[in-house]
Length: 161
Image: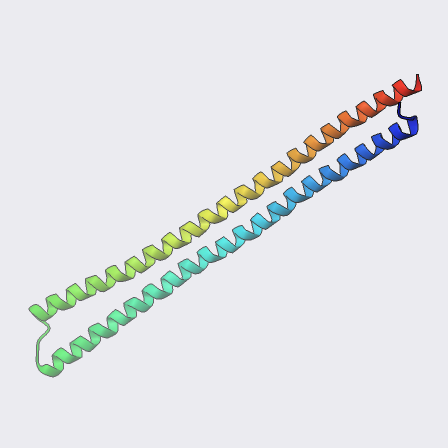
């Protein structure tokens, strides 16, 4: 039969161990939440960058199209071709295609930005979930520790009698 000193020491060790383990679970949940928030901010930054890059690239595409259109007009004028009829139709078709290309660039950039915003939201949800899991783990450990302490107290009382 264990001595009362051993029972007391075991009960105290169990209580301390449960406390340390619970604190560790809590801290782990907090750390995972911080990491997820950092990842979410990175994803938001990438989303802003994708949107900005899309605007820059679509504007560059439009400027290039305008330069091409100006060059074609100059070549038509140099060769004596008027801007009416077929040349006008060709220019209109090229302008429409150029605008479609610029809009495609914008749409693709917005799709990339939206994917990054969704990733940021997922990261935040994972962080909240990890934090809750840490709290639940800490609570579970404390409850188990309380049960172990109660068992130790019961053993102590039996040893005294």
